[in-house]
Length: 278
Image (cartoon, rainbow, N blue to C red):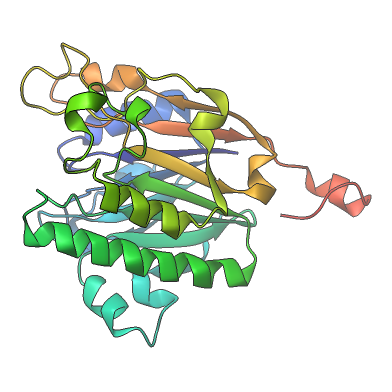
């Protein structure tokens, strides 16, 4: 199973590029962030024509998440409150459309769009830290359900210096502050692994290049789009790749897709007693 994540920065603006990439790469699952469109105006027919089922949670002009799948989408859950029904903060934070999940072929795929935070002095930064605290509670509740978990999305956080083109200058600022990194690490709780780093330890691999200051032409990027796997899925991972070339399209998203390949055990092998079922 190939699972991809991509902040498309407006699904309608990037629709032709998105469809071209889907035809070429044909991932089993694609999780989108920043769709920036209300559900009624989402171009669903363009994706169903390619054989994808989809679930969406959007709002006008901002945020928005979606999951496209070649396999049946089961037990769809939208928003932080879906697993935290008695959590008033989850209900409040869920007003922004940033979380959606579904069970696909026995794997819980959770797609998130973490707030940017704007600047360390902004109210949006405090909101981001609150949101990450709520994500921690959400993931703790998810763990209790026992599903193999693939957590993907735009996390708007570079967790380490090697995820930054200029760590000396950028560390400590927005998207690389100690509080943000600590909050995300706490939310992951040691239960989820950054699969890209399993296969690539070096710096120089980015998933986002700012539109400003010639960042793309100078390759001054950040790695802020991540795929995290629970241990029962990590053993089946055979690779994780950033599709950097897509960022070079005309009028692109400022993010590139990230794709993980999972070589999951076959159902018949489980029936013969060889593998645990997914």
